[in-house]
Amino acid sequence: NDILIPKLQQVFTLQNWQAMLIQTAFFGAYFIVSLLYFVFSVTKGDPILKIGYKNGIIVGLAVTAVGCLLFLPAADSHSYGLFLGALFVLASGITVLQITANPYVSILGPPESSSSRMNMTQALNSFGTTIAPIIGGYLIFDQVSNDAATADSVKMPYVGLAITLIVIAVIIKLARLPRLTGDSTTVVAGSGALKHRHLVLGIICIFMYVGGEVAVGSMLINYFKLPQIAGLDESEAKHFLSFYWGGAMIGRFFGAVALAQFRNNSLKYVIMAVIAAVTFGAVYAIYDLNQALIILGLIAANFVVLLLGGFIPNRTVGLYATAVIVLLLIGTFGQGAVAMWAVIGIGLFNSVMFPTIFDLAIKGLGVHTSQGSSLLVMAIVGGAIVPPLQGAVADVTGNVQLSFIVPLLCYLYIVYYGFAGYRTRANHRLVD
View 1 (cartoon, rainbow, N blue to C red):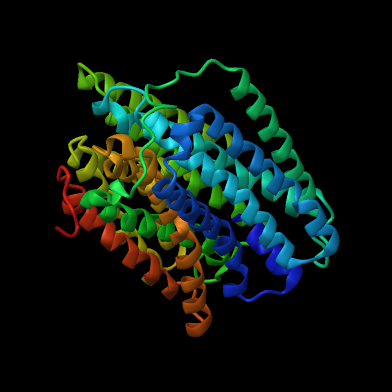
View 2 (tube, rainbow, N blue to C red; view 1 turned 90 degrees about the horizontal axis):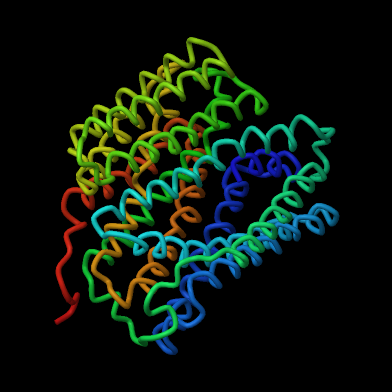
């Protein structure tokens, strides 16, 4: 999406807020599909408990593939509305995947290591997000003739995604995945998940986190183009966008290790040192020593905050959100390389937030876990609402830097949830 935004903005001559409708269509699907899922689970019983986690994953992959294929008629008809529709269908499939796969991973092992498993799966997810700007930018901006009047260059990437998703669906179908007790039994109707205060506050937290993360990522290319920041063009900026999402990947690998159950913490430090060394070597090999040293410095800062969190999930979330606020202030009011790398560093501290907040919010939900998951996925609609708000602030003020105040407000709430809002209260009702 972050590569698609500047491309379609170029093709259809869009203002910033109009281009951000790409994120609105994408994340709006999360809200609408999750809302439908929640309503169905309240009236008829949880669909995932009926069809099983494996079949839910296959359905999600198939619908996502259909959305990717819809990019073909959208490009041929030169219709921005059809592009938004295709993104909506694509995101609908991803919504089903989120509702199904996240709780499956969380409950597929010991509760005390659930945050570690969630971070590991999200780290692998982030690997795709890291290489996407490079591959997508190459295919959309570099490889195909970059005619500003057409969107033909988006066809090949999305057809490739569709084929890949179908292959994965077939692999999942043939694979032997554990069938958890209760997949097809104990189907409970009602809105029991909403009785849990920590879930309700977690829903707001997911809204704020996704809104803030997506808003920052969506504005980065335009931010890097600012003369007082770096003055880069789109082709150059995509590499630094990968650093932002790559930071989330590295941070989630760190989080998976840090939050795992080890008999000896020394092993944790060794594994994290290896991750840091591999990252340094990769950046040095691909780019240069200067950028590799900057990345290593950001990783060291991340590790320090991780130590301050004591490997406690909620405390780590609160401290990471605090670090992001500091980096946003530098990016908003600073200039040059310091401001640029401060904003890039946000990705590293974003890392553990989504999987850890998600895991904290669904703890203790029992048979209402999938229903709670659907509500949390519904809150991903923050990615549809916050980016256009930031785009509007940038348009009204004429100041892209100042617009980063919008995601900063989101991270203030995450600080609250990490230090206080996460607390579980058994059978706590919002209204007695």
